[in-house]
Structures are given as C-alpha cells and as structure tokens.
Amino acid sequence: MTAVAVVAVNMFEGVLIGLALSVAKAAWETSHVHLAVDDCSDGLITVRLTGKATFLRLPKVLDTLGSARRPAHRAGPDRPASPGPTPAAWP
Image (cartoon, rainbow, N blue to C red; front, side, top):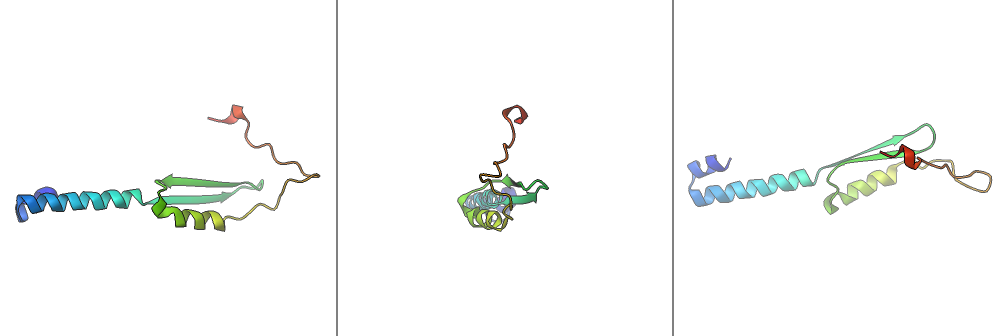
C-alpha cells in the first residue's frame, strides 16, 4: 500500500500514509479478543480467551465473565470442594 501511495502522490506523503495504515492495522489486531464460555456437566465452567486481552477490551471480558452461569454446587461442611486437576494432569 505504501508503494501505491508513493507512486500516487509523493514520497513523503506516501510514507506517512503507509505508516498511518500500519499503525491502524496493529491497533485493529491488538484490540481483538474472543472469549468462549463452556458449561461442563460436572458444574465447572471453562473460559477460553484467544487474542490479546488489552485494557481496550476489558469491558468485553468483564461482560462475558459476568454473564457466565455460576455453578449451583457450593463447598460447605457437608459438601467438600472438588479437588480440581492434579499436578500430574497439568501439561
């Protein structure tokens, strides 16, 4: 795109246009984040975050986490907390 802008206008303006487009593209790619919330049958909730979680997308992250269904199972004296994954199961 910079080469087209250099040919269409002049060297200085073409380089400025290319620089502005590269900054805009970097900002666009940086601000994209995708969150997936999966409810498991055992009451656990799995949240997957792909992309770059910057402060620009913090409201989206908070909205998605806030809308996740909370499990009905709560640990108490008659119900111990689930042990979760063991260190041997970690990658």
